Image 1: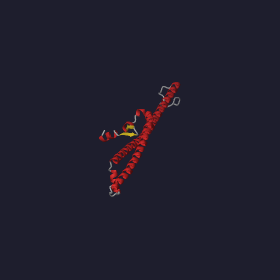
Image 2: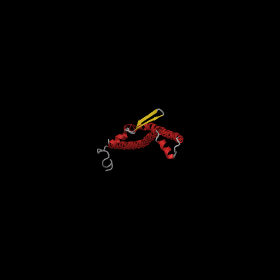
Image 3: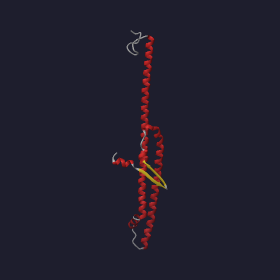
Image 4: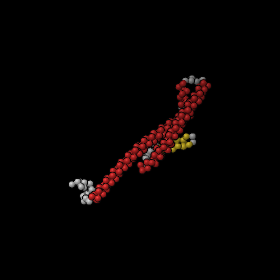
Amino acid sequence: MSFDQQQRAKVTVDLDLDGVNFQRTLADDLPINGADITGEFMEQSELYAWWATVSELARDKVARTKYQLERIYALKDHEVRRTLAEAKAKVTEKIVENAVITSEEYQECMFELMECKKQLGLVMAGKEALVQRKDMLISIGANMRTEGGANLHILKDAAKQRAAEKRRRAEAETTGSKRPPGKGRPPGKR
């Protein structure tokens, strides 16, 4: 396995939403056990439900963090304008904006928003991967049915051939013919 493949295999979603930790490694959820397709079909909905639920929770966390960032911006904007007005300093939009976006509180919230967006992206990718897994399971199931159907047809054909051969042998025994069944002319037509 290449270095890049190893890194992708280790992608883990680790979300802490309101004190509840959601952690899962995508590489653990994607493999399909060909020996237990029925079990894989049964597990698919549970896996998809987990990823879909966590994606909605992650989307909500992004929205809440954006709101928090906007709130911090508004509060800091007000605070900076008041401080500059008290100091009788010139108040420009750029001075206020720079003071707000460089504040420690705003920076912390911005980095949290970036992390939330990253986690949301990973969860959405995981959710999409589960859709691809479902499609693969359906394809594998269809192939197995087709192959199983082909095997049934082969078995039916073999059974028909055995039955026809058995009938020919029975006919040969009743007519007293010494030739092998199914060979040459039918008895009585010489």
